[in-house]
Image (cartoon, rainbow, N blue to C red; front, side, top):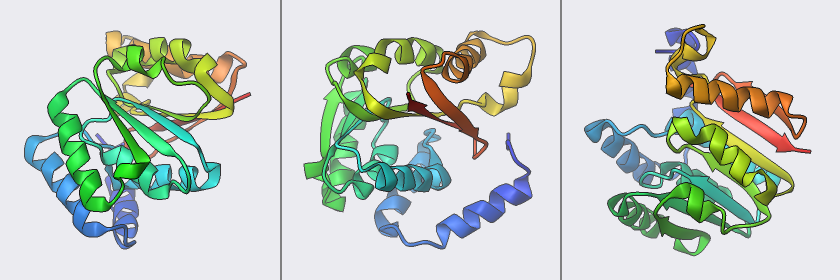
Length: 209
């Protein structure tokens, strides 16, 4: 399902693909996602992550739900002096991420962890960018656990926050309800200034205040 019209989606995608970002490696990662139907953030959101990283100049980025490293690639590529922590519960995903990062010459900008993202992420303090792309049912729990581990003006970036448009439905399943609870907290808690970018499946950006 497209959040924006399919024509607009294609227009943005075509513009995004016209920029050069180590296309060989990106195409390998994107082709693999197509082959196994793996849900990556896609190049449109990837460029958004790159831009925020360049502007924020973080020392520490922590990803909760890294898959095989596609989103982390964009963070690492934009880092001037810092690291991105990749966390995934599958060893095979992290092993593949290491391979891609080695090809891209980005190993020195990354730390690779395998296990429960909620438990591992708690080990890190003064997080400048926290990226949420773990199980959707855990989004609300994740921000409640991690908000005090953010730096003073840390950013929270969360993918899939419009959940195929299901967030506007009155009757929802557990995943949709968890995402709605997360969104409402990010807007109404008074702890963040937040906005949702309706790009692909919706990206929430929240600035800790």
